[in-house]
Length: 195
Image 1 (cartoon, rainbow, N blue to C red):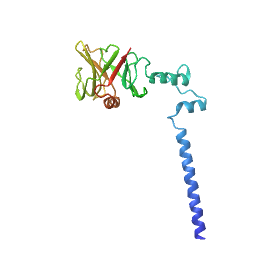
Image 2: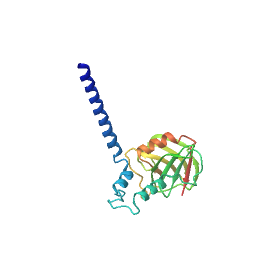
Image 3: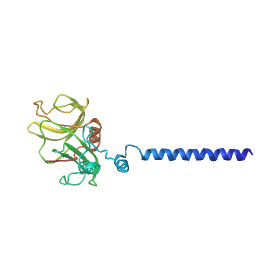
Image 4: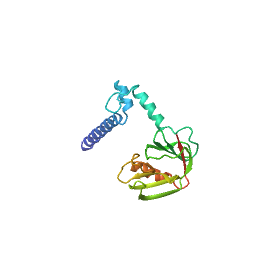
């Protein structure tokens, strides 16, 4: 009898465990990290502009715009490279396969480099930037007319002030993006600046 009651207990515990796993799987599928799928299923458009207003064109247009922002600019060459789009104020870290491993927004300074192909010339783990702000993960790729152009992250997370009157070529990243750039863009890495 003890054997049969222990079998029933094991079966009940197994059934309860499977039910719990099933419930957790359901919750994971309904999690908010999948908004487009669940918004469509609920018949709601969760895409919005700043201020909470619905975006024109709905979720599919927002998804298309996000994909466009994430797409590596077509006229940026081939191979492993850093691509910096001046108008978009955006950077892509592109592998040898032509696919971006990371893309992010940046904050440019008062002076921008000319469109063209450059290479990483020097790097510094930490320094004081040309605007007087302590910066880290500095990756320089060009100098012209006394202005040095490079990517960096301000230790305090600030962006350069393009209206300060200082002619600086600092292109500021968020700290996590600065670390990714530091690991990716070793000396000699190609940097392509597009309009």
